[in-house]
Length: 261
Image (cartoon, rainbow, N blue to C red):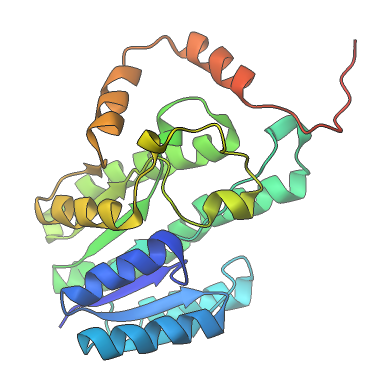
């Protein structure tokens, strides 16, 4: 029986991944801040799929609570076979207009926390010579799209490098690179996405299905949908300076920001 630990499991892609792994008969360790939502999800998955879903409430930006999750990952008596680093959030304003404290929190959750959790699980995976790490990145990381995109670029590069390091031990590493997905992410970040066409949106279940397929195929990166696959191919050939300027024009400062004339 495979056990999967998922961060940010209470909603969105995290909950969809929990359902996807449960459908395959995997037991789960569900990590998020909202204990009530985790317990409801765990009960639902247990009823529908007959799996065990352990609830581990934790604010991963709290050092002590994050340490509790790393200890669970390192517990050889209750081994975790797959880690899914999914927890994250975005900010509504570009870097020059965001409080630096918010930027630091975002960077910690998107970069430092996955680094810590991955480091905690790897000794056990190496010893057992099996298992996997999935890191949820974003197509935002393919281009210069602000500090969120920069953090996601790090996640993708980290995953691709780690995959090579762990390949001799039979451990798989996958960067999941979704585009705009119908979750709570944009609302929680205060982002206005009303101008986006329906065609650009992905369903969480589609992202999960593609990721699990690519994990089985031992691919390094998982991108859902022909539009985003074409986008990922095209951006490799675009001049970085041109793209950076275009992205900067698309990132609007908050309405109350003052600019020097």
